[in-house]
Image (tube, rainbow, N blue to C red):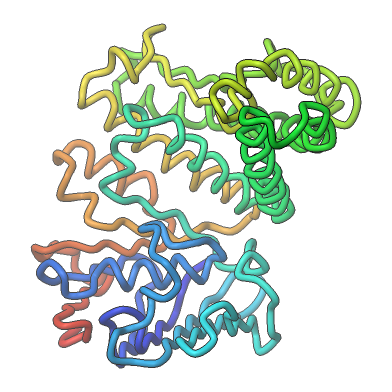
Length: 372
């Protein structure tokens, strides 16, 4: 899969961007705050996911404009396709999205069409950061492969919000404990399903990332990745999320009700789970060096691309947002060599010298492409 043409106007500071891109390497070069990351963000939105910068919809439109337009033409192994993504200030809640001229109801309906993997400097701290970042990582990975998974996550989050609100009301005597039953039953089924799907992906991630880490450490270190559930002691060979697992999940929720009421939030569940990375048996979050943690982050992202390739049979587009400048030459070479058969977009402040005849460099200033 590769993008052939990008047109963007009114998205943040981007104006009249119209570029034909290379099938292999595309470097977006410019000073800070000129629009490099905005261009990467616009591509990412067209993959069906929310902004990796957590931008609100209203902040995506240029302050001096009333709307933005993004148009991306791309090709996979079957045909040429086009995504049109528009948003207007006067109707900020409704996104005008079309795939090959056909209107779509939600951005998530784009899943499985333009497949991308984005890598930002913040991702370098994924193994050291909060569990929330690792849960978000695995949820994005799964959503790109399994469209229905995002809907289940949204349902679970809505129920969790309602349950936490109810817990606070119970603690001040406005509601009864019995009212938790209806929420707990729904949460148990959805949470069991999410646990099964996350665990299955973690096993694949362990396989791919383990091999990659063995390469980057020259066989000196072994990386193992585990899914740590706050509900289930083990998830191996478990799949009955509608019955046995849901019953076990429900029993755990009931056993922690008094603690939940006291704290005012749900203390167990998939919203408390974690992805654990061990290097030679030691937890990377607690004992890993900066170099080791960066290497773990690299193999996570490359493994994500490989798994996406394996599942969709299409090579994803790789979006490297100012990442290479954060890496030493050894890790730069490792990343680029492992994604050499995929289309890559690289943002940077200093020009990157490309091999003759390979790739294109675009210079950006004030939200406009000034030279290519």
